[in-house]
Amino acid sequence: MTTSERERNSTDVIVIGGGIGGVSLGYELASDRRVTLLEREPTLAFHTTGRSAALFLETYGNSTIRALTTASRAFLVDPPEHFRTELLAPRPLLQFAVIGRGDALEAMYADVSRLTPDARLVSPTDARTLFPPLRPELIDCALYEPHSMEVDVHALHQGFVRGLRDRGGQVHTGAGVTQLGRVDGLWHVHTTDGSVHTAPLVVDAAGAWADVVGGMAGADPIGLVPMRRSVFMVAAPDDLDTANLATLSDMDEKFYIKPEGRSGARGTTVGNAQLLCSPADETPTEPSDARPDELEIARAFDDIAEATTLTGRHLRSSWAGLRSFVPDRTPVVGFDRKVEGFFWCAGQGGYGIQTCAALARVGASIVRGEPLPADVTARGLVEADLSPGRFG
Image (cartoon, rainbow, N blue to C red; front, side):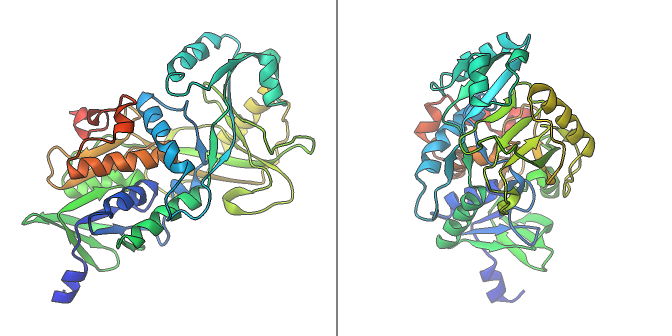
């Protein structure tokens, strides 16, 4: 490399991965650092982020996830200037408990109500009012979250990318990492496009490939397991008004149904309202371009037909994404305990979209050696909850 090439590829932070975790943390760090983001695919958000069901659910996940989600709402409701459209639209959530599971749902309500006080338990009859196809005779009770939202994932992701670039950050696609090593306090990151980038800090935000990247750097694995989730679209019944219909979910996650209005999968427009459905499957798999599981989709059709009057089985489209979890199903954000200058931002599972705003601020605070944001700590979260060191 010539001197000018070395200078051009020298930066303060190299972020590996262009999904929502990488672009949001890159955006936050770019306010006071030079940031270069590397993405192996030809487009950003190709895998998990681009295939999200796009829901903002404050009652979803463990206590750490709920703290990060509720702390993200203010940003998503009133985003900064780099975000040019509204990011959230109302879409209430209704979680139901089948006969015999009412006590478990009541316990869940007691747990989530501290951070989501507007959530409430409703009777089977009221649940049917909120989601008319539901069969009330089959359930004990339901939990209604009136202020859950659906997220414009594309606008959210692109806002972070725009902000990263406006702050001087560089974004390289088609730049998969082939080798990285640390020499004299600098990481040297080699990519598939033939470039070499150097920086004192590397952020591993490689999604399902995070442990692979960590291994290249000499870090111990964090136990990340990519899990495939299948999603499919069906037409909504002609007499079903989907405009204000709640998302429906079995509390035991056998399936969920999200009304899509007249917006189709991945931004397409169709003639009739649709229902985005999922068997909520979690099948361990290798990092890959995931494909939907036809058997899981068939199971979901059966479960949906049993719990509701929705009996149509004609697929309009289907796809799958990877949700990557560590054993405690909580993100891993922090410096590796053994490898100098290596920072994890991984394991967001199915919560990356709804937690990204707060999680990026938390990550940036840890990088800078600052206290965590006050609104996050007020919700009970501490740095150790996310630290890679918790697995040791």
